[in-house]
Length: 68
Image 1 (cartoon, rainbow, N blue to C red):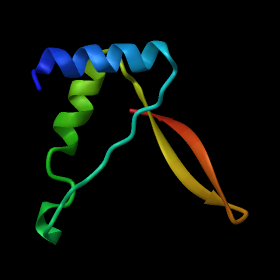
Image 2 (image 1 turned 135 degrees about the vertical axis):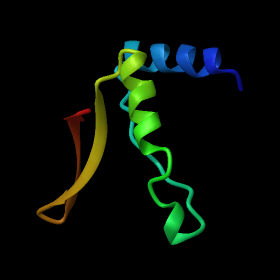
Image 3 (image 1 turned 135 degrees about the horizontal axis):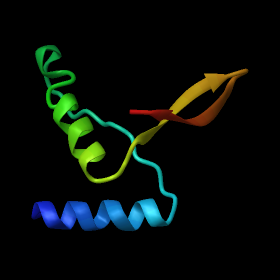
């Protein structure tokens, strides 16, 4: 997928108020978090300044937005 396709998908998601979150597909402990700073920078450069996180509050999963 081209970078333009990612940017276009991000723009469409933002217009529809669909949140973004960071994911990790690490297969080794030393790989956890690799690329997260680059991902943050990419989102910011494309007008996305918040991510969604999920927290456990009173035994319920709650979605929150936090600033990048």
